[in-house]
Length: 224
Image (tube, rainbow, N blue to C red):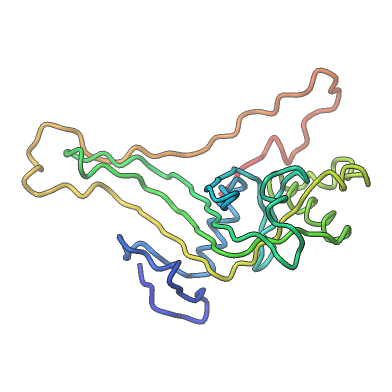
């Protein structure tokens, strides 16, 4: 995969330069957006009280920024302080596409698509932007749901935190294909190949009090 600079690429920086498997790295915006848009759960890394912390959280992309969902009592929000200071973070999203089984233990691997974002996350303090971001988060996880549920009221908005992170220092990394068996291992009596991995969403399970049929956006739910 080429890493040559292009108008559609994110700029390469010291933090987004790979130290190994550099042929798998890309700064292509379309690829980065596709990986981000297929997922909805990220892992947010930051430093609090001198120690590293990584938390899973929901996210949604709008153009060249990510909105991250949280609570006003969450550690990232408390560490972020005001919008002027923000919180240095490293955010990752990964999709596992296959388990790569080689004839040697050394060459076992995983097929994956991942994105790493470095930057400063800042709390969203504008009420209108926060409400819009929460609708965006709901619709990113389940498209069509924001218009099909009660919107957050003032008390719920006050208890909910949203962080915003610009997509400026970003890289993607992709591994595809089969195992890299050594030629001398080709005759060994061990199976070699790829076990594909995919996420499957089951049929909607209604709440005990539910009397309505499941909406179409749930019965036909799919990602990617």
